[in-house]
Image (cartoon, rainbow, N blue to C red; front, side):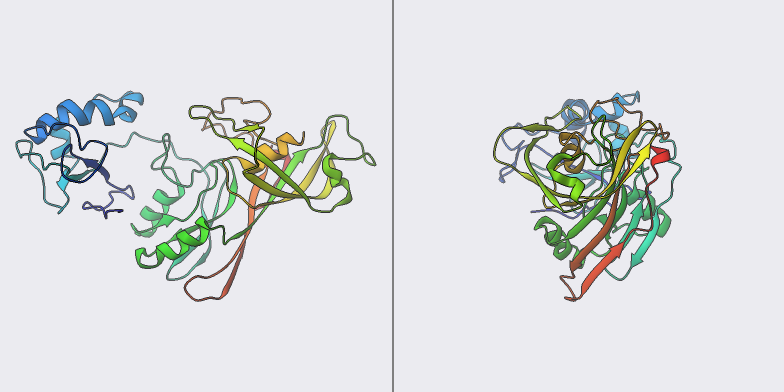
Length: 337
């Protein structure tokens, strides 16, 4: 069961949740001994095992006083906790983590549509959708929470940081579940536009993979594997778990080679799916920092833009039943790849 935070967000950033050892319910730490005091638990367990991100960013390790001071540690009822308080076996606690400084990503979020339940935006290239291991403040959700004063904003789905286009956010917890189920069950029609290299040496009049030169839609199905700790996603033998429809719109000269504009329709939602499928056809996307070669991209290097745009979203609204369709106001530009 998902529990509501007992501590409200601070500067648009949600409070972190901790769970104490012991208790009657089954959880990962239920079998561990319960420390006598909150101080003992923080020193022996929480700080060494859960605060790695802060130390990875070169910050000083936290001390227990941080949690009950700036961290505003509270129990599940929202009551402030003191270091000498006994630990509640299996109890939930909430606090605010220290957030490292982040340089601003110099691109803006554009509002496409808003109503009582939803906010639909155009996410720019290079701005993360939600907080992650590198960006917490510099993401769409945190920015909009702060700018609009809406702590309840939650992204219903995600786009890769380097992908631009339509992103849907929920504004109200009361209706959020219906939209989350819609996305989880793939009840959304998503259409992407992409610019990609054509096979090396290709010239007009020659065939393309899958007969794409016809302009007809073609299907790509394969098995994708995401390995923890590795950025590139692998295509491996086996039962397909990823499906993309691909259609060539036009070809154009780009530098000393040829490129194409494509409409891509994902029928599954695997990580990097569109990028991997196009790369697997021998037609990697312009500006892709990972495929075919992982360049180890610097998140603050904005010189080369991945030419991939989440261009259109359509669905039957689970609350009103009406057909909803949204179109991005952004466009692609091969000169920026």
